Amino acid sequence: MGLRKFVDKIKPTFSEGGKLGFLHSTFEGFETFLYVPNTVTKRGAHVRDCNDIKRVMIVVVLALVPAMLFGMYNVGYQAGIEGILPAFWFGFLEALPNIIVSYVTGLTIEFAFAQKRKHEINEGFLVTGLLIPLVMPIGVPCWIVALSTAFAVIIGKEVFGGTGMNVFNPALLARAFAFFAYTPQMSGEAVWYADGTTGATALEQLATTNQMQWSAWDAFWGFIPGSLGETSTVAILLGAALLLFTGVASWRIMLSVFLGGLAFGYLFDAVGMTEYPAYYHLLVGGFAFGAVFMATDPVTSAQTNCGKWIYGFMVGAFAVLIRVVNPAYPEGMMLSILFMNALAPLIDYFVVERNIARRKKLIKNVK
Amino acid sequence: MKLSKNFTNPLAANNPVIVQILGICSSLAVTVKLEPALVMGLSVTFVTAFSNLVMSLLRNGVPSRIRIIVQLVVIATLVIVVDQFLRAYMYDVSKQLSVYVGLIITNCIVMGRVEAFALGNKPWDSFVDGLANGFGYAFILVLIAFFRELFGSGELFGFEILGDWYTPNSLMLFPPMALIIIGCIIWVHRSINKDLQEK
Image (cartoon, rainbow over all chains, first blue to last red; front, side, top):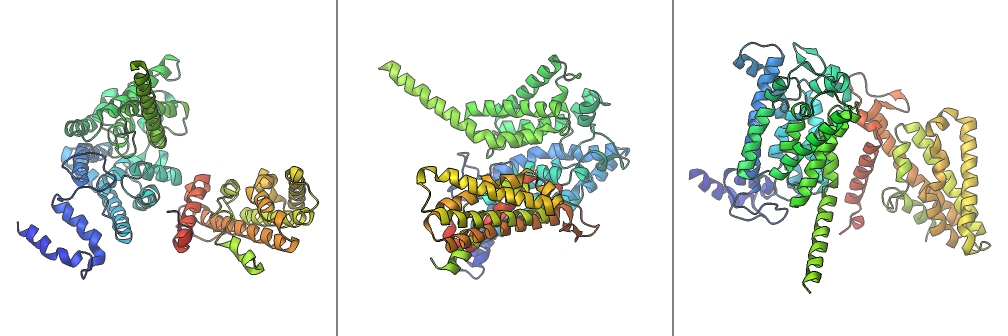
C-alpha cells in the first residue's frame, strides 16, 4: 500500500488552503481513479450501489471493447488487407488518433471546468470519450473530432451543469454536430472504406436501391463498411451481455428499442415502402450500437420502468421511420435517440402522473 | 431617469434580446450574413424610435381601450415605409430579408417599448428609448451574424476573410446555431453582470 500512503501524504498539499489547493479537483479525480472513495455521492446519483460512478463507467468501457476491437479489424478488412493481425494493426493505427484526440480534448475541457467551478471531475467522459470515435466514420479528420468533442462537452454537458444534468447524450451530440456542420466530410463520398476508395454504406444502398451488396450474415458479423464501432452486431451483443449481467444498463430499454424497430420495420414492409426484410434495420448502421450503448444512457433516458418501455419503443420506431421516410438522413438512429432524449422527462412526467391518478382511484374504491 | 442612462441601459444591462429575450425569432432568421442583419437592425431601430415618438405624442389623446389598435396602425405604417424604402434602394437585401421586414410589426420589442415606455413618458425621452432599444437589438444581431458569417462561410460582408484552408461549418448556417450563439452571448453577459443571474 505504498501508493495509498503516498496519496495520503500529498493530500494536504492539494486540499483547501494547501500550497496547490487550486488543483483540488484534479487531485481528487486521480485519487478516486486509483482507489474507491470512502465517501458517498452527494447529488446526481442514479444508482444506489457500493460502486461509485467511475466503476460503473469502467464496466461500460469494458463492454465497448469487443465492438472497438472488431471495428479496428474491420477497417483493415474493408481496406483489403490480408490476415487478421495486419488488418487489425492497420485499423488500430487509423482509429488511434481519433481516440486520443477525443480523450485529450474532452478531458482538458472537463478538468478546466472542474477547476473553475470547483466541482469533482466528471467521470462520464471516460465513456463519452470512447463513444465519440466509435460513432465517427473512419477517415474523418482529427480536427472535426476535436471540435465535435468540444461542442458536445461544453454546449451539451457543462452548460447544463455537468454529468448527470445533461439533456442530450454527449457522444451523439458530438456526432450530430459533426454530421450537420461538416456533412460532406462525414458521409457519402468523402468517407473511404476500401483501398482508399469511397462508396455507399449499407444504409445508403438500402435507402436508394432497396437492397445491399452484403448478406444479412455479413451485417450480423460486421463485415460491412460503417463507423468504427457500429458494424458488428455480434460484438455489440457481447457488450450488451456484460452490461445486462452487471445491471449497468436497462434491459427494458434495449429490448423495447429492438421491438420498436422491428415493429415499424414490418409495418413499412407490409405497406410496401421497403422491399427488404424488416430485421435488416437491426443489423445495418448504428441501430444495435445505439440501442445498447446510447439509448440506455441512464442520464438521458426515461427513469420510470413504464417510461423506459415507451421511450425505447419510440427510439426504435423513430429510427426506422426516419431511415425509410427521409432519404436525406439514411442514419435515423442518431436523430431518433436525440429526439427521444428531449422527450424522456415528459414521458416520465406522464407515467408518474398516471400512477398517482391510478392510486387515487384505488383509495376511492376502497372507501 | 436621466437621458444618458435611458440611452445606455437598453444597450447592455437591459438589452431587449439577451436580457428580456425578445425578438428571438428574427434574430435567428436574418443573421446568416452580416449585411441583412445590419439592415434589419437599423430598420427595427427606425420603427421603434418613431413608433415610440408618435405614440408618446398621442398618449394623452388615445383612450386606453383602443390604444392597441392605434399602436398597430402607427407601427404598421412605419413598417410599410421601411419596406418600401428597402425595395426602392436596397432591392437585394430586401429580397434576402423577404417576409421578415413585414414581420417587424410582430416584433415584441416594438410594441413592448410603446406599451412600457412611450405611453408614460415625454416624446424626446421616448424617442431616445426607442432608438436605444433598437440599437441594443441591432448590436446583438450584428454580433450573431459576425460569428455565423465568419465561421459559416469564411466571409464578412461578403468579402473572404478566412482563406482556402478553412472548411466552412455548415451548422452555422442553420438557425439552431444562432440560438446557441445567443445562449453563449447570454452566458458571457451574465458572468460579467452577476446581478442578472437567477438564484
